[in-house]
Image (cartoon, rainbow, N blue to C red):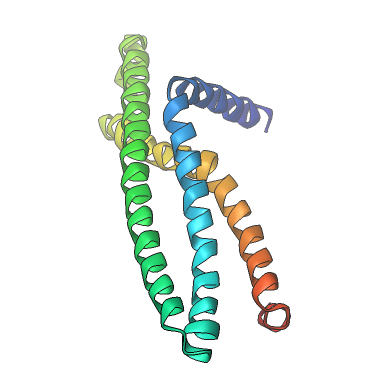
Amino acid sequence: MKEQINKRLYLFRQLKRVIAKNKISFIILALMKIIKLVLMLLSPVIFQLLIDDALGKKSIMSLYFVCISLLVIFFINFFTDWVLTIHTNRIQNRFNIFTKRAMWSAIFYLPFKEYENMNSGDLKNRLDEDITNINGMLISQTVDYVFNIIFCVGNLVMLLVINWIFAIFSG
């Protein structure tokens, strides 16, 4: 048990080095996630405006405003997705290279007796599958985890603001 905890702490210390090297990309990822959060929370408000003003009061200016707002949200969302993809790929590729380099250096400095005892399939699995799994964990445990908590709270607040009765019965 204590050995597993030490291994996890070592892994997070290694991730801390990767995060420090990619600090700007992580900051950009966080900013883009915040922009996406705001855009996701604006959509229900615009649809409420569509239903109340454009359809309910038959206001053509409200309909124009809703259409233009939805187009602007679409293009901003497209841009943020593009930036998110670029920086996520940058972080994951740098992490991939960092981890594979560390794994290869560890393999090269293994005593020959231990190297002979290892299965070649096991080494290949460590270099491919394990690094891919850790790579997926990097983004999901750093940026996405915090964003999902904020998103849930934001959705709850918006649902309560739009219609608190619906919020109570939908939960």
